[in-house]
Image 1 (cartoon, rainbow, N blue to C red):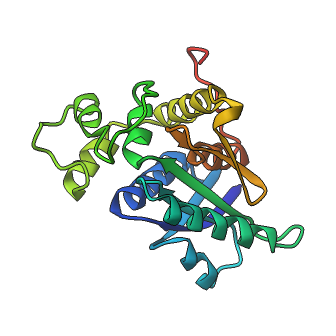
Image 2 (image 1 turned 90 degrees about the vertical axis):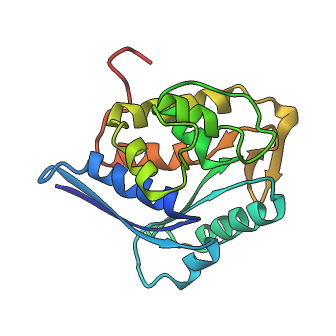
Length: 210
């Protein structure tokens, strides 16, 4: 049996509910289980973790580069201090916002955002919501998640990789021994989730060959 545990720091309810739902899609007892122990906050909360297993922080850019880089820097510094064979500290960001990550489960969109609300209407349309639905509210998030399958999660990972592969060297920012791109959109959440799926032995490939 493969059993994974992660201490996860997330920015809000949307990310918290998403991770819990993904774990339900991945759990296949007794073959495999993954548990995300979640706390809402910023990357600084990782320093307070009482757990000795792998950790991750989910955060957005939200046009706040200072806070974004602080979260990224904290994750990178904590991970660099880990000794060989110790717990890993991952970052799982979405830029500009988590909404596009939800969109990528259903459709490939790579247009840049002009505001944090850029993709709200895309989410509403793709998930059959009304124009008045607040996609950050608990009941609407539940409606969205019920429409996401494990293949959709794989699709989002592959779509995010497609976006990353389209980036130019000129838009790359070297930051604390890693790279990110100021050319929006950009992600690292797909890197984290791909790692989780691979550790659980879940095939990332889709039947349609994507």
